[in-house]
Length: 131
Image (cartoon, rainbow, N blue to C red; front, side):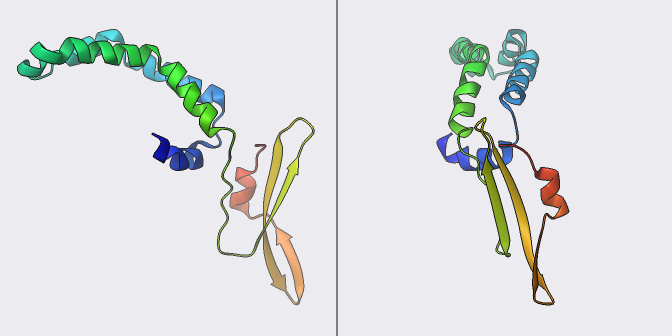
């Protein structure tokens, strides 16, 4: 799990804690104890007879405790936000607000007729948000 944090941070950095909790609620509503019990009956007979109770109990516990696991992972990921640049001339303007949030603007530097122009590309302005 720890190795995946870089990809998770990159993919999920714009998700709020409430988004994570909504995902937990969705998963818990779909993977009920009844669904788990039904899935156990689809196991090969040898596994069902020997391990289905243990596997089913573990899955039920994990589903029940999913919110705890998700919030621990969210708390590990959320303090750091990766801001990705490219190999182009870019300018990052980072401003910390009084409330502790941070505004980030990514500007592209282009030079036309010996004049430097900074602009926010369309794809960055759609992503602009408070961190």
